[in-house]
Every structure is written in structure tokens, then in C-alpha cells.
Length: 198
Image (cartoon, rainbow, N blue to C red; front, side, top):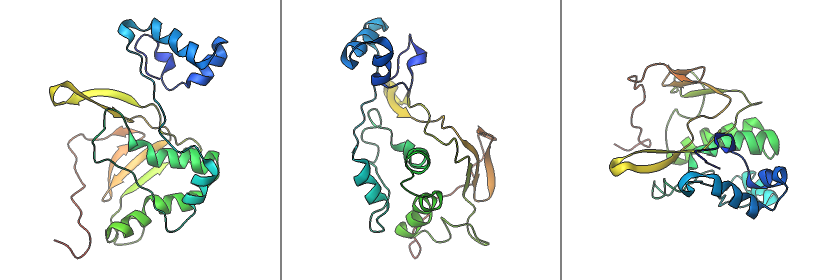
């Protein structure tokens, strides 16, 4: 939920709010909406498969890989940036559908191998040191928020405040420490191409 006049509602579920208010989810949604100036309440509708057993089966199938994108066609409606933190928080820690090692392998090495990126997705001497240091006990997507930083005041959804993500190294260079960007001008990354291609 995103409500300018009620910041305490950010990230809350309508069902939980309805229970606290002692009314149906629909009535609770209407009540909160009417409190919002200019009816600017936004509610995140999950367009997802809620078949936990089916998703668990897919996550544990070697022939199935992680991935989702519409190439930015719906950045004002969908935020796929939460995939890694949601996988680690929801599917590893909470549901135990995968081990931490399996999830990290699927997020790193499997993806690098699939796209043909040599020396990526692994920690070993000589490989590119792209490393995220996170706390498995607290990692989670954090709130999804709306920003207007596109041309013509265009908006997009972002998830820029995940929890449990502490440090980031790109090609061995520390770029985030304790959740803060060290140098906005530092650009240690570079365009990568699949092995054997120019």
C-alpha cells in the first residue's frame, strides 16, 4: 500500500489492515481510500502464482531457471527488482523451499552459465569479484515505492531499500558499505558479453 497521508500503511497488507479495523478487506480499502487526498492511494496487486507447492517444485527443477522481465515495458506497474531478495527472504528463510546455497547458485552461477558469462557467478581466484554481502536472517525486499525520474515526469516503481543487504563489491571494488553507496561517481562495472562474442 502507498498512501501519502498515512505513511504507516506503506507495505501493509489490506487483509491485515481489515482485520485490525474490524471490517471486510473491501470496506477497509474504501475507508483508507477516502482518507487519502485526491484519492491517491495505491495498492500493490500481486500478479503472481500463489501455488506454493507448484512454485517449490519449479524452484527445485534443474530444467527451470529464475528470470522475469518485460524489458521495462511496465515499469510504472511492475517491479521485478525484488526477485533476489524475495527469493532469499520468502522462499529460502520463510518457506525453506530451497537451501541458501541452492538459491545463491540459481541467482549467480546458473544465470552466468546460461548467458555465457565466463568467470562470473563464482567465487574463485581469477574470477570477477561481484559480491553481495547480506544477512540471511533479515534479507527482504523492503518497500516498493514510486518515483518520477523519467522524461516528461514519467513514473516507475523501485525497490531501493531492501533489508539485510550490507555490502556490494563490483569487480572487486567496494561500492556499497553498510547499505550506503560510497562514491556516486565510482563505476567499476563494465558491459559484459557472452564468451566467444565480440
